[in-house]
Image 1 (cartoon, rainbow, N blue to C red):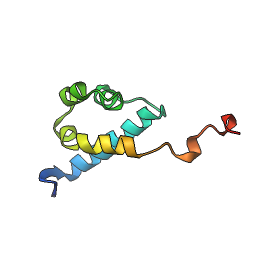
Image 2: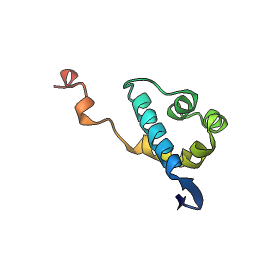
Image 3: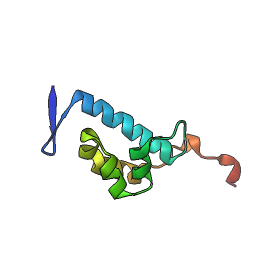
Length: 86
């Protein structure tokens, strides 16, 4: 099964890969769990040339989504260090 997303054809496997990488980007940004690889680090560090050069065929299609997600998703409130507030 394939899906057309803004004129880019992606498969179910692509979507699963995008979800996994998107999760890795947010975890790396928030320093939670295992940090991502070279592509993820490049996205988190806002290094476009490295991100493009390290992206596979699926990630190059999702690069804009990753950037939008990273800058429009805040750290979940459950993860805030409340000991430094108040």
